[in-house]
Image 1 (cartoon, protein in one colour):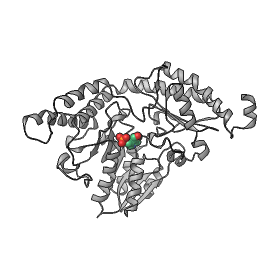
Image 2 (cartoon, helix red, strand yellow):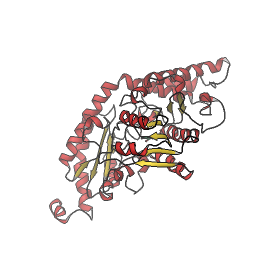
Image 3 (cartoon, protein in one colour):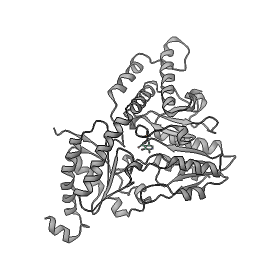
Image 4 (spheres, protein in one colour):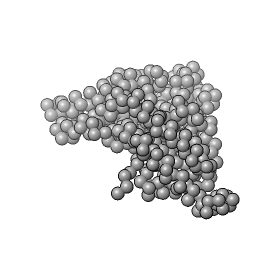
Length: 398
Ligand SMILES: Cc1ncc(COP(=O)(O)O)c(C=O)c1O
């Protein structure tokens, strides 16, 4: 069988074997309920507390400011709904951006249906949020601003520190949430440096297990719990904690930050080769996201190809052993062009021809070279079949 080349680390990452090792004792031996008082529970409690301290240490916050959740989506929903409802007496306006993950956007849309006012900030052609619009949007009524740290489709790293300054100058009571699901493991996620009040994390994007996440909530930020029941997580999220997965998430995060510089250097080398070579080898190709590579995620290379559908490229790449994405995993399978690309002003036709390659720590330059070898042929074959491919080009291809 042909060796597989996995280039969809923005969708999910494999479990690091060192993370699995850290999790196993909590699956096998320390299965007690961490909220119980007897001896069997104590090891589980220690695992949970240790994980919380590790994550707090990396975020630069206090352990009690970390709430464990089931993943990035739940963290985002808890941040938006939790603040919107807890601060409702002060105002009912939320600000977010047009390029957020659907975990934020669909939650914001639901809040609109429930009577909240939501402003969706526009972005420029590279996916950067319009800060002048942010300044205009924030009012006395605004209780929450939610802007992602890094975009999952095109890798834009948003200027969060500047956005926080703008928001706090206009309304110091407005809480600032950032969805850092794609950023953790690639960027510094220090909450004080960023200045944010809430920050979402999902373990499976940095070689941790799926189904584990966390929400940082700065002390004194109003937050109404969404899952009700037991008093876990200091009454902010009911439910027996998933101890093995939480321990795994902490281990994965610790490894990601211990190895951050080396991983980023590796990602950049692979990403830059894709960004340099694909447009050079494939005509009518556009890089999407920031041109300035210091302002895009170190592991993201994203493109739009004229005259073809992204889905067709994915299927052809899969047949050649390459796993990739046309944007976010959540929208693949739908023929709707990505909301991120359209918000960036990319025409619908062109947005349909999108491809995202997201590299990981175990990819090699040989794998990148293999992709560079097969991709031009795939694109030109698909174009020769495309009804939109200009006749003159068709003539030169066949
Ligand atoms: C930016 C962003 N936010 C939120 C999520 C949702 O995270 P999870 O899959 O852990 O629910 C993702 C996952 O793709 C993401 O990329």
